[in-house]
Image: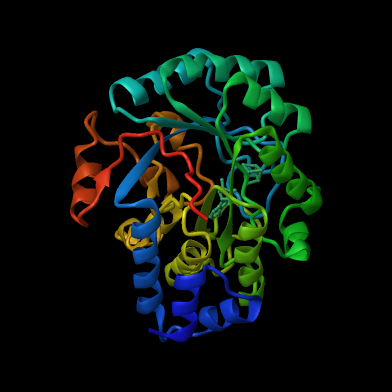
Length: 343
Ligand code: 5AD
Ligand code: SF4
């Protein structure tokens, strides 16, 4: 095996130049993917954790240049689910589909105050599920209150660790504040989920190497990595977009350096190629997030084109997903899928 890949698999440490060297050549991609698959098996096993995704509001105060939900996009119908609708979906996820984790995701919708959010959290936690939130940048007190109310995890991608690029792509937002949020999430006792997009305009391989080191520095419990896919109703509509291979490489390196964390095979990977998710599951990933949002809402939650048609639940017994997972010799996990630290 190539020496650098071997070193990563044995020590789970690489420096910036070493990561960059692996990212810069495609000669050893299959070796890299194989090594990440092996480390995944060794540290987190063959079971795949499912997280039922509920996209409960597409209203967002932000204007991220890459995202279809940005506030200046007038071509989508905005919606917000009621507390009852959210609860009913979560109940369906738990009792019909047998899912042990529900992820509540939304734009930064200011309707959901700390009080409203905490009452939703408390109600959902009567369902014997692990609960993940993905609702954006909040205050220190808000993260602590979500945890107190019963939330278990929080997803907030850093998007890129290149501050200048971040500030160009996320007008009026501050990279330092996002970093602060990740610190507060950790301090509150919530599991920390983060991640980046791959293939953003003017993103360099060197900054992707920094991203991977950043995941280690923040002690992430989960990392989601997906290609950037240009959305026609955004200022980045004519950009190139990310490719699957490079996204898989960043993901595989993340598995080698953070061997025991949870890593989803992201929907964006599946959107780019019909077998993108299976490739990811064989290159380091151990989580899938099936979308359980109702189709009438889901079609208005297109962060990028094709998202709403990908990775949705088609039947009440998950047989399609089961078959897909069985086709690569894996099984659906029946536990909550928390991060068990080995290292
Ligand atoms: N392509 C791929 N991923 C995107 N996201 C937002 N817009 C896009 C896009 N055009 C990702 C961001 C965000 C997550 C919810 O979706 O990383 O954090
Ligand atoms: Fe809003 Fe998130 Fe989209 Fe940015 S990426 S516009 S914060 S939903």
